[in-house]
Image (cartoon, rainbow, N blue to C red; front, side, top):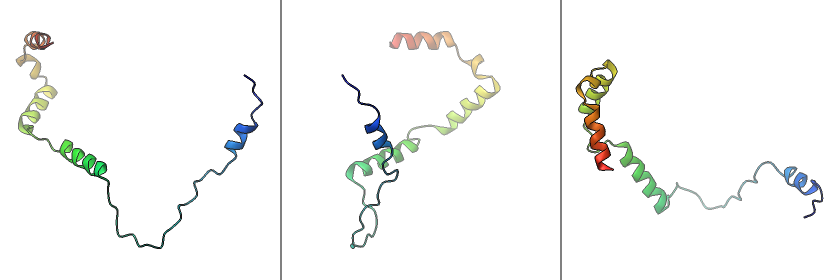
Length: 88
């Protein structure tokens, strides 16, 4: 393989640094229409943001127990670990 130098690389680097603006059409634009995939992604994001089936009262109670250190004394970690290992 023969390397002729960096002239071709320098030519690429010295080209325009900004993309040329797209040609404007004379048709008025009244808004943006999303593709089916984009609409589906938005729906999935909205559903992910909703805590469906999550009992926030229990979540907050567990967070408080973790914060004040009382959760560890009420949970048998050996039993939890045995249960998790049995699932594998």
